[in-house]
Length: 144
Image 1 (tube, rainbow, N blue to C red):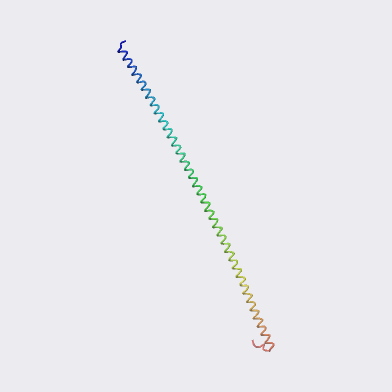
Image 2 (cartoon, rainbow, N blue to C red):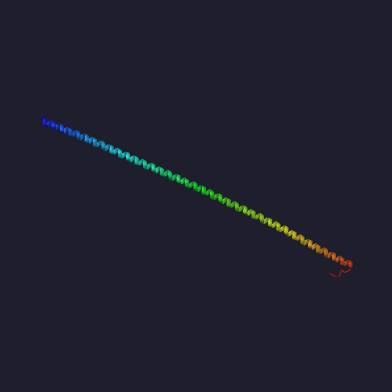
């Protein structure tokens, strides 16, 4: 073999080795890029899932807070309604008692007036009887 052929073979081998190492390097870089891309996709997917979980948790918390606020408002409304009903009941009871007392006073006043009328009638009758008795004694019964 000639020196030139050996040199060409070495050159060809070097080129083949270089191409092989370049191919290996390219394949390795390609695998690394693919692995990095898959990691990035997985990280993105995980971030999106975490974001969705946080969003759902926040929505659930907001719904719970709204529900609690509505319950508190309902309880307050119910308490106010009961208070108003109790107040109306007490006012009606008070009105009833006032009415009863007024009726009782009116009855007492009426009895008082009736007694006074009776006393006046009795006094008039007594006076008339006294006058008639005096007339009889005096012999003036014929004068009315």
